[in-house]
Length: 345
Ligand SMILES: Cc1cc2ncn([C@H]3O[C@H](COP(=O)(O)O)[C@@H](O)[C@H]3O)c2cc1C
Ligand SMILES: O=C(O)c1cccnc1
Image (cartoon, rainbow, N blue to C red; front, side):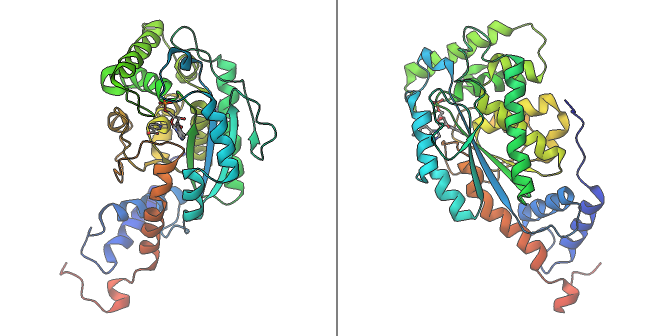
């Protein structure tokens, strides 16, 4: 796999910073909205980036670790929610519609047969193995899932997307995500494992133990990014990593969602460190370790709305902010154009 990624365009970045400095506002007064526009300039290689054209892909898969009792909901909900996505009734359907984003749903590893649904069928296997006891996936399965994600990114980009958003659906997936985050950041389960769908105190403790078992199973072993996903990951998590990586290869950034997306981003960075330059954080999730995982990625969330859903929902909720940041950068008058006096040099 080619792990060399392009760099954002520093000449376009400087030109965008220079433009921000002459728009009719006190220097720096639009804060992070200025940063966002300038980062898009660097990503797109143009002083004034094209208007936002976002695409969301939700990757769904099941998790063998659910047999340990780590989720508040049964595994069957994964397939049932995919049906709900296909029917347009989930949060991410409403958010995609409301923000004008393209939405695709991909079965990369749901345990039940979904072949009748109008979604993308790319099942690598019918759910992962129980990572508390054995490797969740083989390297070949991880590579196949990475490619499922990459193919989704290629479709989105061919369709005109200039920003990618990945969502997850997979009952139990906060457990592999926590295991990945612990392994890739060296934080311990007690600060990373959270309540996911809302587990009680006893289940939270059990979840910490399950993540501890998985980490102990691989402790002291050298693992590259793909091995790490195989040992501790899941199929939708690997697909999300592949989606982000292909975006970066094609110079298209990704807006990272919550806890699961962050685990995938850390795995993607372990595969190709240059990925970090193509990521923008959206929100800070309620899930316990999300803030630390974002810090490990050197990402600063734009908002904290108390969300703990996944599906790409937190990222989708931030799309209007990004759209406005680009519109301000493109549409505001300069001091010279408006005849407004700039501050003395
Ligand atoms: C109805 C429903 C819709 C969801 N949409 C996303 N998730 C989120 O919650 C799950 C992760 O939490 P845990 O690890 O505790 O199972 C994943 O399916 C994730 O996508 C949902 C969960 C449920 C129940
Ligand atoms: O932050 C997330 O993505 C999240 C948190 C809880 C449950 N599902 C997803």
